[in-house]
Length: 224
Image (cartoon, rainbow, N blue to C red):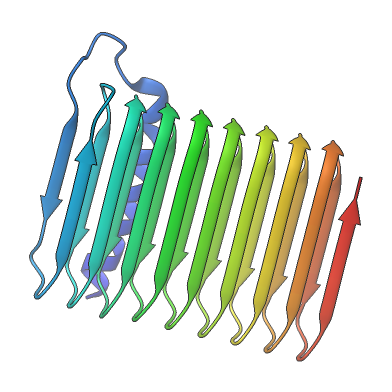
């Protein structure tokens, strides 16, 4: 299984880097499903655009993966190597990249991109985690890394050039990030257990950071 995990991470990074190199002259979509695992389900839909690429690799068991692309030049990648994982990706617009890597068990990931040039990454190596990302705008970056267990993370980005990062290596944590504006930066690091962190940014060039290494803490940051 470790070999599969390394392979999934490498493929996800490579596919994301392909966004800038997508040829403008290509007017066909590409869809790939690879299921060497067992009892997995996969669904892909590409319509109303061109030069989209969708890839699903399912090495695990009882995984569920769904990809919908409406637009042009979008790249979607789902890699599953654990048990009972679920991932969905929806892309409207152009040159967006969404990557979901699930090497743990019973994780859920949802990614929605509307706009142009957005990048979203979910990496779930823990168990029973939930991740949600919504991007509506231009050149936003959202990253969720869940190596702990029973964590929940939500990221919502509106505007342009915002950056949001959530890292949950502890367990039973909850994180919520909301950005509406431009050039905002928000980071949350939860290595403890049972913590809540919320960040809400509107405006331009705000910076917010929360680090929770203890247990049972609550922190909220609001920036206008």
